[in-house]
Image (cartoon, rainbow, N blue to C red):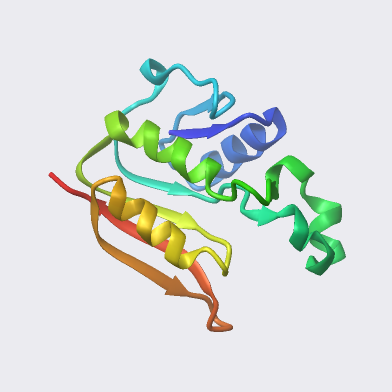
Amino acid sequence: MGIDKSRRAIKTAIRNAEQNNADISFLEADLFKIDHSEIQNAGIIVSNPPYVRYSEKQFMHRNVLGFEPPEALFVPDDDPLKFYRAILSLAVKSLDPAGLIYFEINEAMGKPIYDLLESCNYHEITIIKDINGKDRLAKGRKKV
């Protein structure tokens, strides 16, 4: 199941799923207001939530700033993990036992996200580096 609050993003995702013959359902919803009963169970959750702190905006490439809406990129400096906590809250019921979760992450947030996953009962946690050697992906398995 794909979830996004942007109708445009959902339409793009539907087109991509159709082009790739992927059997995926989509839900247009605000992550912070979502009805948990609308979420289907999953064996894997993959998320690329907003993770750039507003204070980092000055270091972003213009092509990214011109392409993505701000709400798809930025998080408050004082709460950079807010989306991760919300997704992990949904995963309590929607992620199968021993299911996997993958997050794209801010290069400066590897340790805090590792700690968050650990505190939410995940194990086999790995922080994966990108081609430039920066922390970019977090992976964890839900404990049974």
